[in-house]
Figure 1 (cartoon, protein in one colour):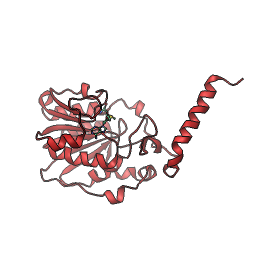
Figure 2 (cartoon, helix red, strand yellow; figure 1 turned 180 degrees about the vertical axis):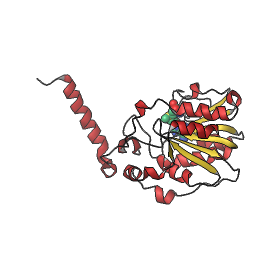
Figure 3 (cartoon, helix red, strand yellow; figure 1 turned 90 degrees about the vertical axis):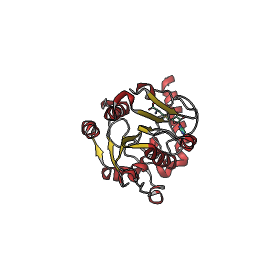
Figure 4 (cartoon, rainbow, N blue to C red; figure 1 turned 90 degrees about the horizontal axis):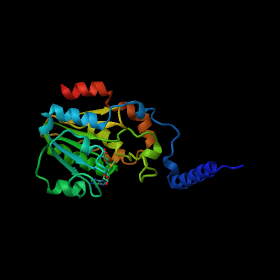
Length: 235
Ligand SMILES: C[S@@+](CC[C@H](N)C(=O)[O-])C[C@H]1O[C@@H](n2cnc3c(N)ncnc32)[C@H](O)[C@@H]1O
């Protein structure tokens, strides 16, 4: 007898196949073998470490993309701004609209808004511009698990998009130090070291890359474990 569960599984697979079909060129059989569920440090640990380095609870914090405030409400800062056009945070608007009107500076910024390369790199430039020298800008989702997580547009709930391409630009930018921490789907951390920093524009070379290219080249990125990251942030 055919069980209800096997019918549901069959239908789920068929729906997935229909969603995947237009993106057959992006499909790739291998995954980055990080087991995020076994690595208990997450983005919140690093953001709080960066805030501690910048004076603790009185340091100024900005989050781009807040959703259900899972991160925003866990951040140990008194002075917090959260920007999201849909929900969460304190400002109901896009990051572009926020930065166009903003005249404040911040000690720590977390970029986790629209997960598309063009938007993420624009958020990166704006965030580093409004960050104090010595402050930190962190980024979520720079190490997607597989091609489906990284596909644009999103094919499923767990979606990193192609913001990982921004990591290659940050890694070769001047006036910042950049590390990619191997926790929580990849957390990028940039420390601003000069006011006259310069973003490395490699858009033309990166734009068309696919997950398989990240799989082949991710060891070129400045990967670092959570303990080394904490030592680097605290130094
Ligand atoms: C992955 S969620 C953020 C999760 C949250 N930072 C956390 O760690 O729990 C991404 C959020 O970005 C928001 N978003 C989408 N486009 C945006 C934009 N242009 N500017 C700012 N936020 C945006 C979405 O509404 C969504 O809530």
